[in-house]
Length: 517
Image 1 (cartoon, rainbow, N blue to C red):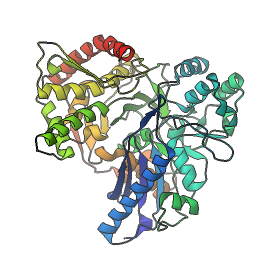
Image 2: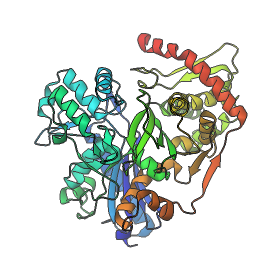
Image 3: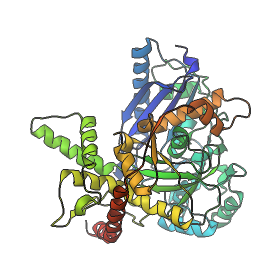
């Protein structure tokens, strides 16, 4: 195999770091992964940099082993590399490259005052997750490290910096740090000035430089090659694409970068992204980000999706082992998801809240996973599983209603990707019931992020002169690609509506739980 005719996408997700190697046909040919989990340390959701480094290296080592097993050769080079990661968060460094504060992930809901004040100042919704909200909250808190910040970045931006020495990032990832002017494909100049007047901080001096899809993000340095592959096999000099966030890679992986296209990524968190044709009003529940090419995107982001489902499946697996019947975890997920299809459309009177952490859409700064039921509810395994699947989508639906009803944004069809859609037909049907529109899932649905990053590498390396990202994906990646499209039955849609009505009424229960538990 000619390794220079392959490209490598790596994504640091919330529960897994994964690498996907694709060939010139844009088909995955090898992969590696590493499982990890965030930690709640002193009230902050975080990952240690040691865990970042070791996890990334373990993931790459697994990829190398897969290439060796399949092709009998060492993975010493590729045509291009790109890194993406969970968006947002806060990683500040001083002029000597020393980390000044713990990595504060997207999951934290500790920047409420800052987000509220900046939203009013800019006339633009600033979510609590965004890097600028974290920075301003640190200023409001009087945190000592702020005066020493010479570089502020995200997890993807940090990895890219370590690989290339370049303090840059893709526009989609940058749009989760600070608002982007899609006409200029750069940070919004007026808002930069307003922030400087407010704080005295000149953000251009500390934020990464913004690049768009197709531009060069630098090359892999000698130290970058050792950072990724301490064994010394990987050679420096490989072109590196601008790093992106998981929102941008999800758009690429589902061919959702043109106006009126959209996708839902559902894993540890879930978010819907609709590429818009018009400016939208300011809504606390709607983030305005961009595609990797810089087009405006309305995003409904929810901090909680599958974590509570995973916890229950782990409990079932533990019970099975106790009974002397150990099961394959993947098979258990599949069977339990399929069982949910047998449940009542409205879940038979059961209710759950999947809030491991706070949730901006429903205005909760903390979360407590809850399960409840009426005494006369139909407490079956099918209803139990269906309840958790609908709960995973309920907050997303609340945000999407603002887009479709208040802003009249049309949703003709959505593409689904992420672990929620791995079991064919189940998560897809539940999402269709939630949005009342067809949902399509491609073969790569379960591994969208790293595959999407690999596609952005391919675009940088193999695009024709003047070929847009949308045209490249349409004509050279997804032309002829089959997708499974499913429309929920009217009874499923009606059942979700009944469930959501009960969910909204029961929200005070979740609020109370954060105060007493």
